[in-house]
Picture (cartoon, rainbow, N blue to C red):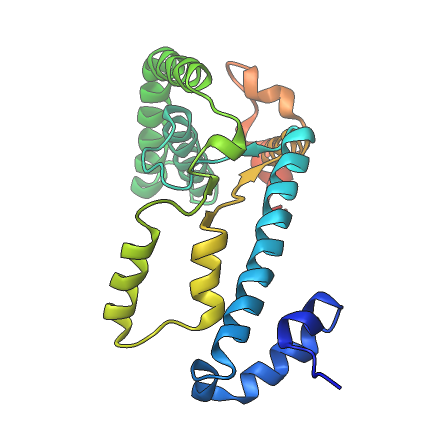
Length: 232
Protein backbone atom coordinates (compact mmCIF):
# COMPACT_ATOMS: atom_id res chain seq x y z
CA UNK A 1 0.00 0.00 0.00
CA UNK A 2 1.38 3.39 -1.04
CA UNK A 3 1.68 5.82 1.86
CA UNK A 4 -0.13 9.12 1.38
CA UNK A 5 1.99 12.23 1.14
CA UNK A 6 1.67 15.01 3.70
CA UNK A 7 0.02 17.15 1.06
CA UNK A 8 -2.58 14.49 0.26
CA UNK A 9 -3.34 14.04 3.95
CA UNK A 10 -3.62 17.81 4.39
CA UNK A 11 -6.01 18.09 1.45
CA UNK A 12 -8.07 15.26 2.93
CA UNK A 13 -8.65 17.19 6.15
CA UNK A 14 -5.72 16.29 8.42
CA UNK A 15 -4.68 19.93 8.71
CA UNK A 16 -3.55 20.03 12.34
CA UNK A 17 -2.10 16.53 12.33
CA UNK A 18 0.07 17.17 9.27
CA UNK A 19 1.50 20.42 10.62
CA UNK A 20 2.17 18.82 14.01
CA UNK A 21 4.12 16.00 12.37
CA UNK A 22 6.10 18.38 10.17
CA UNK A 23 7.02 20.44 13.23
CA UNK A 24 8.38 17.31 14.93
CA UNK A 25 11.00 16.94 12.19
CA UNK A 26 12.63 20.21 13.22
CA UNK A 27 15.46 21.25 10.87
CA UNK A 28 15.30 17.82 9.20
CA UNK A 29 12.13 18.98 7.44
CA UNK A 30 14.43 20.88 5.06
CA UNK A 31 15.96 17.61 3.84
CA UNK A 32 14.50 15.07 1.47
CA UNK A 33 12.36 13.05 1.41
CA UNK A 34 10.37 15.60 3.47
CA UNK A 35 11.31 18.98 2.03
CA UNK A 36 9.35 19.03 -1.25
CA UNK A 37 6.27 17.64 0.48
CA UNK A 38 6.54 20.14 3.34
CA UNK A 39 6.90 23.02 0.87
CA UNK A 40 3.77 21.86 -0.93
CA UNK A 41 1.83 21.75 2.35
CA UNK A 42 3.00 25.26 3.32
CA UNK A 43 2.03 26.64 -0.10
CA UNK A 44 -1.40 24.99 0.02
CA UNK A 45 -1.99 26.34 3.53
CA UNK A 46 -1.21 29.88 2.49
CA UNK A 47 -3.25 29.65 -0.71
CA UNK A 48 -6.20 28.91 1.56
CA UNK A 49 -5.19 31.81 3.79
CA UNK A 50 -5.16 34.13 0.78
CA UNK A 51 -8.63 32.94 -0.23
CA UNK A 52 -9.83 33.73 3.30
CA UNK A 53 -8.18 37.16 3.33
CA UNK A 54 -9.74 38.18 0.01
CA UNK A 55 -13.14 36.87 1.08
CA UNK A 56 -12.95 38.77 4.39
CA UNK A 57 -12.00 42.00 2.63
CA UNK A 58 -14.93 41.68 0.18
CA UNK A 59 -17.35 40.93 3.02
CA UNK A 60 -16.09 43.84 5.13
CA UNK A 61 -16.43 46.15 2.13
CA UNK A 62 -20.02 44.93 1.69
CA UNK A 63 -20.71 45.85 5.35
CA UNK A 64 -19.49 49.45 4.70
CA UNK A 65 -16.38 48.82 6.77
CA UNK A 66 -13.97 51.74 6.32
CA UNK A 67 -10.42 50.54 5.84
CA UNK A 68 -7.63 52.75 7.17
CA UNK A 69 -4.31 53.33 5.48
CA UNK A 70 -2.00 51.87 8.12
CA UNK A 71 0.95 53.57 6.44
CA UNK A 72 -0.49 57.10 6.63
CA UNK A 73 1.50 59.11 9.14
CA UNK A 74 -0.25 62.50 8.99
CA UNK A 75 -2.92 63.32 11.57
CA UNK A 76 -6.33 64.56 10.54
CA UNK A 77 -6.83 68.32 11.05
CA UNK A 78 -9.96 67.51 13.06
CA UNK A 79 -7.96 65.24 15.37
CA UNK A 80 -5.78 68.26 16.21
CA UNK A 81 -8.92 70.26 16.97
CA UNK A 82 -10.23 67.47 19.15
CA UNK A 83 -6.92 67.31 20.99
CA UNK A 84 -7.12 71.03 21.83
CA UNK A 85 -10.70 70.58 23.02
CA UNK A 86 -9.63 67.79 25.36
CA UNK A 87 -6.78 69.87 26.79
CA UNK A 88 -9.16 72.79 27.40
CA UNK A 89 -11.67 70.48 29.10
CA UNK A 90 -8.94 69.10 31.37
CA UNK A 91 -7.80 72.61 32.31
CA UNK A 92 -11.40 73.61 33.09
CA UNK A 93 -11.87 70.51 35.21
CA UNK A 94 -8.62 71.29 37.02
CA UNK A 95 -9.73 74.89 37.67
CA UNK A 96 -13.08 73.67 39.03
CA UNK A 97 -11.27 71.49 41.57
CA UNK A 98 -9.06 74.33 42.87
CA UNK A 99 -9.85 76.97 45.46
CA UNK A 100 -11.48 79.95 43.70
CA UNK A 101 -9.41 83.06 42.95
CA UNK A 102 -6.11 81.44 43.82
CA UNK A 103 -3.15 81.74 41.46
CA UNK A 104 -3.51 78.11 40.30
CA UNK A 105 -7.26 78.50 39.78
CA UNK A 106 -6.91 81.72 37.77
CA UNK A 107 -3.98 80.32 35.75
CA UNK A 108 -5.92 77.16 34.81
CA UNK A 109 -8.95 79.22 33.79
CA UNK A 110 -6.85 81.55 31.65
CA UNK A 111 -5.09 78.62 29.98
CA UNK A 112 -8.44 76.97 29.19
CA UNK A 113 -9.81 80.28 27.86
CA UNK A 114 -6.75 80.81 25.66
CA UNK A 115 -7.10 77.34 24.21
CA UNK A 116 -10.83 77.87 23.60
CA UNK A 117 -10.05 81.09 21.75
CA UNK A 118 -7.47 79.29 19.65
CA UNK A 119 -9.98 76.54 18.86
CA UNK A 120 -12.61 79.13 17.86
CA UNK A 121 -10.13 80.93 15.62
CA UNK A 122 -8.73 77.80 13.99
CA UNK A 123 -11.92 75.74 13.63
CA UNK A 124 -13.04 77.12 10.21
CA UNK A 125 -9.54 76.71 8.79
CA UNK A 126 -9.09 73.17 10.11
CA UNK A 127 -12.56 72.11 9.01
CA UNK A 128 -11.78 73.38 5.50
CA UNK A 129 -8.50 71.46 5.52
CA UNK A 130 -10.32 68.30 6.64
CA UNK A 131 -12.95 68.73 3.90
CA UNK A 132 -10.24 69.15 1.26
CA UNK A 133 -8.38 66.09 2.52
CA UNK A 134 -11.58 64.03 2.53
CA UNK A 135 -12.45 65.15 -1.00
CA UNK A 136 -8.95 64.31 -2.25
CA UNK A 137 -9.05 60.93 -0.54
CA UNK A 138 -12.46 60.12 -2.01
CA UNK A 139 -11.29 61.05 -5.51
CA UNK A 140 -8.33 58.70 -5.30
CA UNK A 141 -10.11 55.95 -3.38
CA UNK A 142 -9.54 52.41 -4.60
CA UNK A 143 -11.45 49.20 -3.99
CA UNK A 144 -9.95 47.52 -0.90
CA UNK A 145 -8.58 44.56 -2.88
CA UNK A 146 -6.79 47.04 -5.18
CA UNK A 147 -5.48 49.20 -2.34
CA UNK A 148 -2.01 48.02 -1.33
CA UNK A 149 -2.42 49.59 2.12
CA UNK A 150 -5.11 46.94 2.71
CA UNK A 151 -3.90 44.02 0.62
CA UNK A 152 -0.47 43.91 -0.99
CA UNK A 153 -0.15 40.56 -2.83
CA UNK A 154 3.20 39.04 -3.77
CA UNK A 155 4.95 40.70 -6.70
CA UNK A 156 8.15 40.65 -8.69
CA UNK A 157 10.17 41.87 -5.73
CA UNK A 158 8.95 39.18 -3.32
CA UNK A 159 11.81 36.75 -3.97
CA UNK A 160 14.43 39.48 -3.51
CA UNK A 161 12.76 40.71 -0.33
CA UNK A 162 12.69 37.19 1.11
CA UNK A 163 16.40 36.80 0.43
CA UNK A 164 17.03 40.05 2.31
CA UNK A 165 14.94 38.82 5.23
CA UNK A 166 16.87 35.56 5.35
CA UNK A 167 20.14 37.45 5.28
CA UNK A 168 19.00 39.59 8.20
CA UNK A 169 17.74 36.52 10.05
CA UNK A 170 21.04 34.72 9.49
CA UNK A 171 19.39 31.66 7.98
CA UNK A 172 16.33 30.32 6.15
CA UNK A 173 12.90 31.55 7.17
CA UNK A 174 10.34 29.10 8.59
CA UNK A 175 8.48 27.37 5.76
CA UNK A 176 5.13 28.79 6.90
CA UNK A 177 6.44 32.38 6.99
CA UNK A 178 8.08 32.08 3.58
CA UNK A 179 4.90 30.58 2.12
CA UNK A 180 2.83 33.44 3.59
CA UNK A 181 4.91 36.05 1.79
CA UNK A 182 4.97 33.98 -1.43
CA UNK A 183 1.24 33.23 -1.51
CA UNK A 184 -0.50 35.99 0.48
CA UNK A 185 1.72 39.05 0.91
CA UNK A 186 0.87 41.99 3.14
CA UNK A 187 -2.53 42.36 4.85
CA UNK A 188 -3.94 45.12 7.05
CA UNK A 189 -7.57 45.03 8.15
CA UNK A 190 -7.21 48.20 10.23
CA UNK A 191 -10.25 50.40 10.00
CA UNK A 192 -13.60 51.08 11.56
CA UNK A 193 -17.31 50.63 11.05
CA UNK A 194 -19.54 53.72 10.70
CA UNK A 195 -22.04 52.46 13.29
CA UNK A 196 -19.31 51.89 15.87
CA UNK A 197 -17.90 55.33 15.09
CA UNK A 198 -21.24 56.92 15.94
CA UNK A 199 -21.39 55.01 19.22
CA UNK A 200 -17.87 56.17 20.10
CA UNK A 201 -18.79 59.80 19.39
CA UNK A 202 -21.95 59.47 21.48
CA UNK A 203 -19.99 58.23 24.49
CA UNK A 204 -17.34 60.93 24.00
CA UNK A 205 -20.10 63.52 24.43
CA UNK A 206 -21.65 61.87 27.47
CA UNK A 207 -24.36 60.15 25.45
CA UNK A 208 -25.42 63.35 23.65
CA UNK A 209 -23.51 63.48 20.31
CA UNK A 210 -25.54 66.46 19.16
CA UNK A 211 -23.41 68.68 21.40
CA UNK A 212 -20.57 68.19 18.90
CA UNK A 213 -22.20 70.78 16.63
CA UNK A 214 -23.01 73.25 19.41
CA UNK A 215 -21.01 76.46 19.76
CA UNK A 216 -21.00 76.43 23.57
CA UNK A 217 -21.68 72.91 24.83
CA UNK A 218 -21.81 72.37 28.61
CA UNK A 219 -18.26 71.02 28.93
CA UNK A 220 -18.40 70.48 32.66
CA UNK A 221 -21.54 68.35 32.55
CA UNK A 222 -20.30 66.44 29.51
CA UNK A 223 -16.98 65.76 31.24
CA UNK A 224 -18.79 64.40 34.32
CA UNK A 225 -21.06 62.25 32.17
CA UNK A 226 -18.22 60.76 30.11
CA UNK A 227 -15.80 60.29 33.00
CA UNK A 228 -14.94 56.63 33.54
CA UNK A 229 -16.67 55.37 30.39
CA UNK A 230 -14.74 52.46 28.93
CA UNK A 231 -13.24 52.99 25.46
CA UNK A 232 -14.72 50.87 22.68
